[in-house]
Length: 217
Image (cartoon, helix red, strand yellow):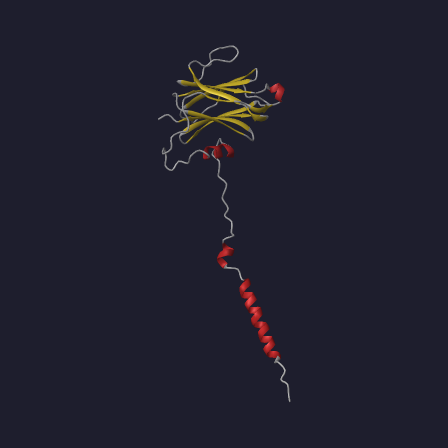
C-alpha cells in the first residue's frame, strides 16, 4: 500500500498566508502617524525702542480683541515694591517710547537682581538730597525712586548723566528728568500731560523697571 506524503506546495502556501496576516496586523493607521506632527510658531518681532522681553511683557496683559476694548491695567495710586537681591544695580539707560494706548518709560540697570521702587504723582518735583526744584515739561509729575541701586564707582558701570532725557514722539509723557543716585536710591521725574493711570513692573536680562502711562483721551 502506498503512503501519500504532504505536498511541499501546500506547506509553502500556508506559510505565505501566515506571513501576509502578520504584516497586515503590524500596519500603522495613517491618521495616527499624521497626528504626531508638530507645529512651529514664529517669534514675535519687536517695535523700535523696545526689547523682545518688553514686548513680551506687554503681550502678557489681557489681549485686546478690538482697539480700546480692554481698559488700561493701572490707576493713579502710588505703586511700591521691595528690592529683590540687588547687586551692582546702576541706571545705565533711560528711554521713552509711544505704544498703542500708552507711553512707556524704561529704566535699564547693570548688575543683577531687581531694584525696589516707589512711583507716585507729586505736586512739585524736587532733587533728592538738596531739595532744589526740578524743571521738567508737563502738567503732572510722576516721581520715580529706585531703591537698592549703587554708585557707578562701586558697580563699575557708567550711570546715565543727571539731567533731562531726550523724549520725542510720545503722547502723554512730556519729559523725563534723571536725578542721579544718592545713598542707595536713584531718582527721576516723568512729566505727563495729565494725571493719567499708570502701572509699573520689572524685567530681567538685563534688569529693567518699566513705567507705562495710559494715553490721555
